[in-house]
Length: 418
Image 1 (cartoon, helix red, strand yellow):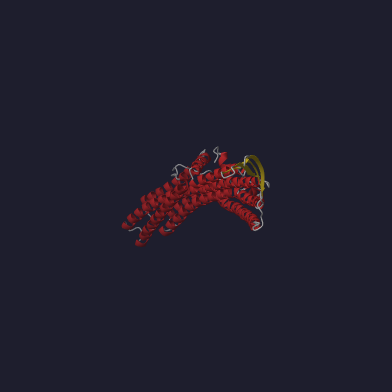
Image 2: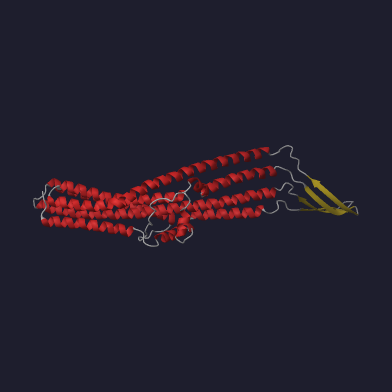
């Protein structure tokens, strides 16, 4: 049954308002100039105040202090004084020094230097991971805000449609079933809007947990590139901070073998004493050396070798996993970017044409209320799916930047170092 001209005009106005509003809302979500700079500043503030990053920085300072201590001599001189008063008075003053005969200090210093390099690589890896998590959370917040706004607009549109349907039912123009369908559609829109609001609140909470900040309502996401620059995945993987951590751990484990081997070797102690014994001057030289007979500490060296082998195998596995993650991230980004490119070149134009076509068919009476409502709902769902696709594109982009360790240079390009 056809609507009267006034009702058609009312519903058409609602649809046109939605069609006009939606592109405007999405255009406001498009990044303004300086969006990348704003994101870089936001990430820098969040990372500087992140407790995990601060703890990792403290670990670096601790490793630096250990390196400073490892460069000092291992043994201090010993001073001995002996006095005895009997029939014969004895007084003796001695000085002894244990000599680092096997350069244990050098071996320990090399281990400490490697531990410092490992701690610094861990800090870089943590900052990279935290930056990726923050940007992913920003994308989710922006995406959920856009979807929530779209679902609110859909609920508003269907409220108007249900009101018009109620009037037409009172006038006898539509059946009771069509009126109930309009009301059910409105109820569904309200439920979906409530669910979208809940997800938006969760996204805001997740971001606050990571950053300790409330995301500005005007924040925008820079557009990811259409395609990735050709690069050598293996070369990128080798430069990743996680790989540097694993390689440094293996290197330190190998250096610790030498340190443990030198620790098991005995060091001599030389002494010089002077004094008086029975009224005569006394001068004595002494020498002592521990005898590694009952325990040669061979087990410690074997354990260090096994730990070095374990670290090397773990470094190989880390590289393999990181390379697979990097290749997967690149493949996923290409798939999502192709879908987004198709949408931007054809989908947006087709969506606008669909609204106009539905309006024309409805005015001509070629589709009934049920078909019209179904197709309008489908069209609105397509719009929301497009917003979700843009969110997936952003997440895939951040995943690639994090997997390839190019996230920090990308942020630095905006003029803000992490």
